[in-house]
Image 1: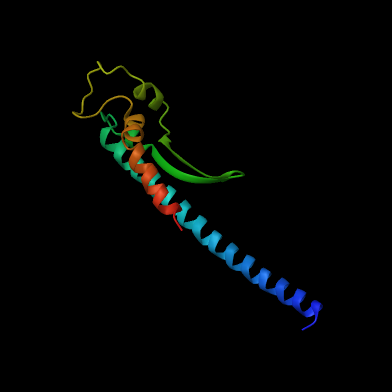
Image 2 (image 1 turned 30 degrees about the horizontal axis):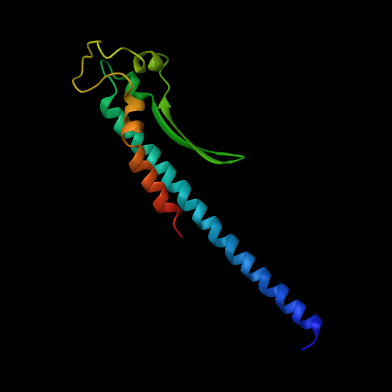
Length: 127
């Protein structure tokens, strides 16, 4: 076999390896994005359970989404009601109308579930 044929064969093999790797990487990235969105939705749902509810607009304004950025996907979980930051930062001593609800309703869910969130992501990142 000539050097030129060997070189062409190696190039073709490398192209096939790169193509397979890119296909695998793309599939893996989609899985990770899917898991990130799933976790964001879980955080939203759990925060709804502890978000104060006198009339309902605060809870109705909850959202969870994923956005593609230059450095990779970013999930966002929050509340769009104008007064959401005010309620979130209220002192614990405030008398909330619904038992089991109160301030820091989003922060508590993320803080208390931090280890579980990281473990889920770690599990998705394994090949």
